[in-house]
Image (cartoon, rainbow, N blue to C red; front, side, top):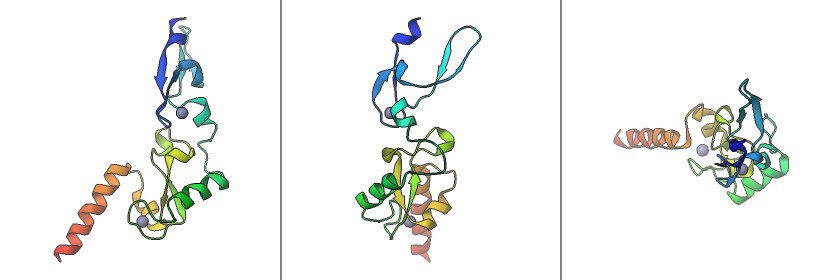
Amino acid sequence: MEEELEVRICKICGTEKNVKSFPIVRKLSNGNRVRRHVCRACSSYGTGNNIKTSVKKRVLEEANYLCFFCGEHGTSVDHIIPRSKGGTNHRRNLICACIKCNSRRGNMSVAEFQEYLRRKNSKIRKK
Ligand SMILES: [Zn+2]
Ligand SMILES: [Zn+2]
């Protein structure tokens, strides 16, 4: 079982861990295991719709309730790595965002959305 000796970098916390720390998604017929790219500790924060209230509060407080994208007052949290791409509700995967940015961002990555806002702002200035 060579696979078990491998290490893998967690997509959320960025820590290199033994593959055993990554939950098995499914087993293949050849005996190989397909594992998540998010470690067990990070996975335990869940990928569901409900972000723990304590986690959310901490993220917002650390950001002083300022939206990560536009700097306005923000009361919602947004995922850095979208849940659809394996992101969890871990504190490190969350940023403070205002409702406006949160809903506007949709499926864009953080970088894509920042670029989108930058372009939008420069257009407004030109007018
Ligand atoms: Zn992790
Ligand atoms: Zn915003």
